[in-house]
Length: 163
Image (cartoon, rainbow, N blue to C red):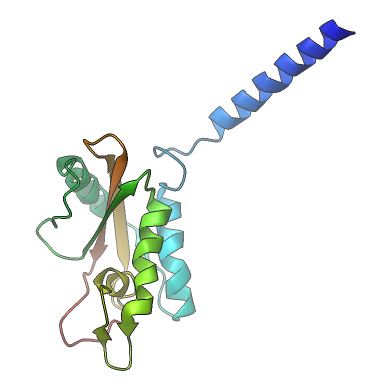
């Protein structure tokens, strides 16, 4: 009887490992697929009745190239505008976008001004932006990730309301 319990346990573990390995997304780690990034952006855009963003491979390639170049994880923007950056311990795409969305608490829409940092949020909800592409890399420090999202058309024009 004990022999069959061990075989059953080994079989159950094998099936679980097989299931988990086949469930891994194409992109490194959970929360980093194009759908993850797009859906997270579009949650807040839906609340504000803004058109949903679509994934753009060209923007994603640009974002990934910058993420790979900035493995020091210094929050320095690339040239071209329309870019959000974040870094943190084990940060994935979903959490990075959520950090930017959380800046909405620091945005006063009636005055179109920030009470603190809110430029990432206003880029996420910029009404004329149609496409997004993102990338992520592991920082040289070994414990943090660097997330970059690029937007087209870019937003954050001084004096203009995001929506």
